[in-house]
Image 1: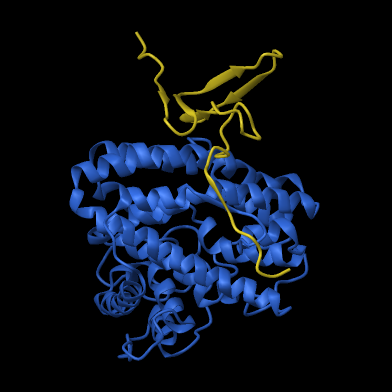
Image 2 (image 1 turned 120 degrees about the vertical axis):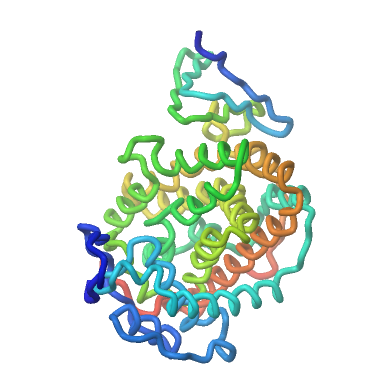
Length: 343
Length: 67
């Protein structure tokens, strides 16, 4: 809260302070972080930056966090600062252009959903949850949870942006799933809280944003896609596609993580988060297909290609994150930029 | 009068039951679910029977290319 709210008398600050500002990773993120500290928004060269790289993705992450919890030391009103929004727009265009280059277009949502519902099994499957089920170490599990915390400590929040942007039965269906994510009215069952309890049991800080400086651009990009699609009405189809991808694929993966955690002797609070998702997402899969995708596409058939884009872009970014983590572990290295404190 | 409980029987998986449910099994044991929608397993492949865990999904086996 370093900048005064100039002429406004309304105090828009919240009583809790946000996370600390992350450490910049290059000129783009430095420009955003400096602006969040109260400085002017510098002109930066977005066109030559790696759209999936650490610098651009951290810069985007910082822009988006203004719409969630903000940062300690950043004026909450910067959420609507025109210069910062202009920079955010340039970062988003670069990210989206890369995704559109790398994602094969299609408007066949049914085929896409069918493909997601086939579960690959057997020794040839390369996957994070498969690795953690079969042979991952406790240190790797803790790293995995630190990566995932960037999303799960605000689980369901990025998708909540899309609620006012769709109508009718699709809205009701989406809210049914979101309501479950938020604990169906019982705060102790909120998935973000279950995740925080798992972190605590694994000896990890559950403070919002605590691990952002440790996670690579691959991890930030997955969550940035959710915020990007959620914050643009024009991307509502992609937002629903991203949401569908998570809900359709998470149940079997959660079961594998439960087994991995049991194998590693994790405690009940750790196991509970993924255990809850085995059942919850088996239901959410059905609701997303029948009560979200079907009515959305009936009402707005023109969104089909965007829905597939949302699914495929999330799969692409998920694969990139997976390759980054498994690649590090196969080389015997940490997947984090900075080590975790001992648990 | 309250609306009747809606049960949606899916073609590929569970029955979807709205509202909290309690399922009594042949041995007299009861399983309760407080979800807005509960997926009750019909294929009996669920490892959490009577609650669906998506085990009805088609599986595609991939053999390993390395150890």
